[in-house]
Length: 570
Image (cartoon, rainbow, N blue to C red):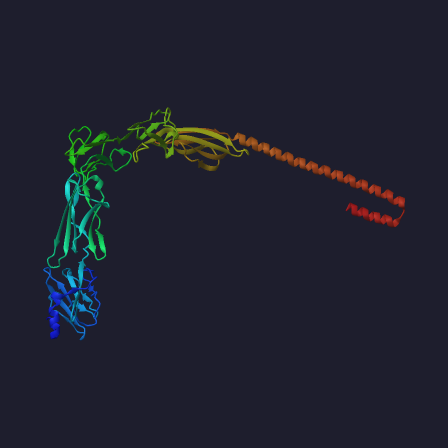
């Protein structure tokens, strides 16, 4: 509803359009507001003393006015005109400052503050500018990959809800991308929403990639104007997979160990440096001119020495792009002659050879009964100590796990041989008879005694070492006896005898008896001589006592001397 005033006011109001006066010194005044904020427009006029009322209007594009707010100076009342787009959005203060809430793009108009007196109308115009910050730019419709030497759409940079419209810029690794024919093509377009009057800006980028673009970040930005001036918003980075053709082929041997031996499984792997890498290749084996089509791997199982040679692989569609590698399959052969279990006779000759055939120099070690020998064994005349378990072992030091060994179990057999010896005890009362036996298998020893005599120790045997041992018996014969030693194994039975005389024992016994009698007689003679000497001494002592008594003539002294003599005799 239009505002109502008295008759005199109507007359004045009728002159508003035709008699409005722009206060001198008031030029164009602009209020900048952000979209959605409250627009605040001061009247910028001094309130006159005879003010009747104040009023706000805006001008249509054709210049016709639309009144929107009225405030009386006397009643202090405020009335808002029925303008739909400003319903419930206006506020007019006592100093005639107009506020418009929830700023819209359609609020961009020329507003006029009017102060009316009985004889004049004063106006102060205000230009309203509304700004809307666009959304953060986003790279959409991104290409899954880019190919070198091909112009291809990379993606679209889009920024929405901007007012006024902004500009979009593309960057590669932080540097601005400028249009370049056949390399960088930029297509920009903008679109306004008829309802909100906000702009959506889109920039499409077509780009010819190179290998230098691998892992390079692409971004875009939107530049727009806001209430405080020009601003820029950056997008997130986008990194693209760059496809490029294979320029080089390489071949690998798996597992990656230094040496390959017979029996190993090996895998050939072919690689191309393109992106994406080739999935199929041709593999060429030694002596085979035609390639074998396979994935990027080809496996050889249980390789033999004849697999040594050059192996190659190439692209299927470009056979000239080829790679090769040399493979050596190491081998080791050992031949021991003779081997296994060998039985020989003592004194025989036995040539032994351990022959090695290998892909490179091999070490050879001989062992006998788990003890390392300094040199290879050689037997010109076998002895019992030569028997044992021999092992010839060889290895390639540079090839892990490549070892060979063969064994020889040597058995040296011999018929029993007997040698008998005799040893007399220092006392001469007994004799020790020893039967020395050698032979293999171990001979069994048996004693036989012919004649009489006491056996002090039945038998005693030594350990059996290197085909030899002995058995001994201690005997004290009462007469001449014969001792027989019998040694027997699977090959033969051997007998040897030894005569033992008893005379030697008797002579020694007689000599011992004579020596004892002589010692006893000597001891008796020595005792007799000692007794005679003692008797003579005692007799001489009595005669000397009598002569002394006569000389002294003292009876008492004689008694004492006699007592002493008696004591002496006693």
